Every structure is written in structure tokens, then in C-alpha cells.
Image 1 (cartoon, rainbow, N blue to C red):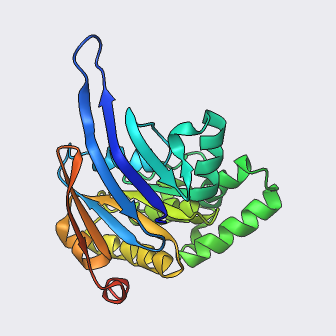
Image 2: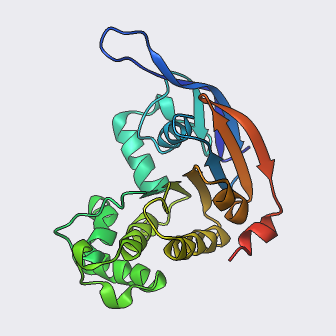
Length: 237
């Protein structure tokens, strides 16, 4: 069984008393464990909506999403919270760091909700910052870091709980090309460690260069699905 099974998923939104607007229209997709999948499409294609559903941040209007054999729509709010904490890591375009917190404190935030002691949180966070090349910046606040450094902090935070799935929503969208390559190299490295990567992008070159699979979306559904040689994808520089 695939790690992620999405079957005929619709997501509709209502604005006041108007007719519902469908962001997803019967999307169906299966993602295997260990894949690096890019959801590729223009703005409004439904790719970010689908990613949010996989991440348990939203629920489908109808259809089924199973992750590791569990149906997300049947989970309570509490169960979804545990699911996100234990299974999912998020990396967003806008970093979403807490401005008043130092780098290591931002990285360790997921561990606070897991009840880990402050001493252990700091230890793990500093180890993760070292892994992303920011060991000397652990005491810096976001305003003291470059955009690329902030995204590396966000990346470290996403990995601190060792998630099964890493979700990236345009993680290089606010970065220059050189810094984007650094972030993508970190994602490839994490995929090599066995983490399943699902990344949203509108950039076909990015998808082709780094992902083992590109799923094209348009008008709320899957319109194309191309797999590439996994070894070549992981060797991308």
C-alpha cells in the first residue's frame, strides 16, 4: 500500500451565500514512501490545497485521504494534532519564524508541544542547526539572519521531530537562485535519509532537476504524472 492514498478528493469553499467554489475537483493520487514528489501547477491549480489536506491542516469536502493506512477525515481535531506532530514537517515560503525567539528556540518549538525538557530541546535544536550549517547562528533572532538562513532555520524546525513526510509549499519562492540551491540540496539530503518529500512549486525546472516524480495539476485535478530515475534525482546538485 502507498504511504499516501488520495481518492476522488474535492474541496469546496463557500463565500457567504454564493455558489461553492471548488479548489479540488476529484483529485486522485498515490505517493509511495521515500518518493520526492513535486506538485506542479499554476496559481489556482489546487496544489497547495492538496498539500494542506495531506498535512491535516484542512479537511476535504468529500473523497478519501489515507496516510500510512489511516483515514484523515475520520480523525478528531486532537488526533489530527498528534498526526501533524508525529508524521508531518512543514516548510513554507514565508518561513513563519517567531521574531522574538532565537534560532534554536524557533527550531525547538515542536518539542515544546511534545513535552520535551528545555535542556533536551536546546541540545536537539543545536544539533539540527549544525546539520543545516547554522551552528554559529543558534542565538540569532530572525531579523539578524538572511532570507536563506531563516529558511534553513525553518527547515531545521520541520525536521526536529523526524517526520515521515516533509511538506514544502514553495520553499524557495522568496530566495535567490544560489540560496534556493542550498535549500533544495538539504531537501535532497533529507530524502536520501528516507523521508518522503512532497513539494509544491510552479517552477517546472525545479521539479525536473530535483524530484523523482512530478505530478502536474490544473483546475483542481491531476492532469499529468511523470516519474524519473530516483538515483539521478537524488544526485542532483
